[in-house]
Length: 435
Image (tube, rainbow, N blue to C red):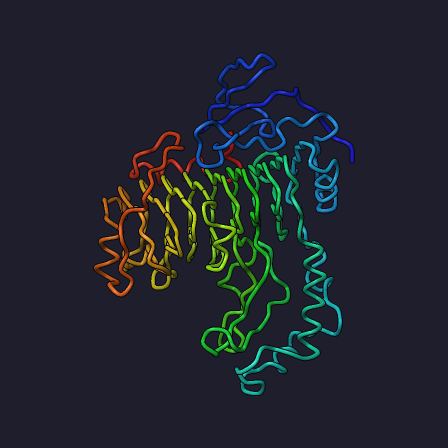
C-alpha cells in the first residue's frame, strides 16, 4: 500500500492543547492549533506514558509509511506494511469491521435458537459447562469472527482519525507484545460478540453469558498514549440486549483493558460512554510474576458517562487518576462503582469530579476486591468536597478500605480545580476535539 499524502518530517510534543513543533535543530515554536496529529508525540511530564523515553508512536515515519485508509481491509494492510518501521495511519470516515453482519461468520450449523434449547438450564442443568454440537459450532463461528475483527497494532505506530467523524466500528484493536503506540481522535464502537458463551456453572451455578473482544486491549506492551478518543457501545447499548435464561445476553467485554505486564501508559482527554465493564488494569490475581512493578498508568481529563463499573479496576499497578469527570445515570445508581481496589493495587485518585443522581450511594464509588490501601483526596461529588474513603467505610463497613497508596504522582501536567473539571472535559474531551 502506498501513502496517499505526505507532510514535512517534523515531530510535535503536546501538553494540553499547545504543540511544540521540533525542527531539525531541536528548537521549536509553540502552536496552539493546526499541527498534524500524526506528527505529535506525548509531552514531557504527561503521565506515566512520558516516562523512560516517552511515547512517540509513528511520528518519525518516512513518506513510504504514511497512509490514509477508508476500509477495514486497507487499515489491516497498512498495519502489516513495513513491520515495526515508524508509521502513521490516518483513518478517514467510519470504518466498519463487520460490514456483512454476524451471519457472515456462522459455520458448523450454529443456530442461536437451537443453542438456547440445548442449554436451557431446565433441560441441561447447571452442574457442567456447555458441551455438544451447538457449542462446537459456536466455537467455530467465533473463530471466524475472531480472525476477521481483530487488528494487530505493531510497534512505533500512530493511528489518528481525520476530522471530527472518523473511527472504527466493531473492530478489536490488539496492542499486544509491542512498544510505542499512539491512538488519537478516533471514535471506537465496541465490538459486538456475535456468539456469546453460556456457562451454566458461572455466577454461583445460576449461569451467565460471557463475551469476548475488548475494543482496545493493551497486552504486554510499554509506552502507549490513548488521547482524545470516544469509546462507546454506540448502536448496540447493553440496555437493548435480550435476556435469555434470566440473564442479559452479554455481547460486550471491556472498552480499554491494560493487562499482562503492560507499562507506561497515558490515557487522556477521552470519552467513555454507555458501557458496562470499562477498564481493567491487571486482569488476574495470578499474574504477579508479569504485573508486579508494572502497570503504571495515568488517567486524566477523561469523561466517563454511563459507565457501570471499572473506571478503572486495578491490580498491582501504580495508577494515577486525576481530573476526570464521572457521570452516573439514574438507571445505574443502584449497581455502579468507579474505582475498583484489587490485589496489590496502588491507586492514587485525586482532584476528580463525580456527578451522582439523587439517592445514589456515594460509598459505592469505591469497591474493595482486596485489602490494598489507596489514596483518594480532593475529590468532589456533586460539587462538594468528599472524603470517598471515609464515606465508603461508613456506608459499607464490610469492605473497609485503608488510606495511603504509598507513592505520590509527579508526572502530571496542569491539575485543574475539580469543580472546573466537568466543564473542561465536556468542551475538550473526546474524538473531534484533538489539537
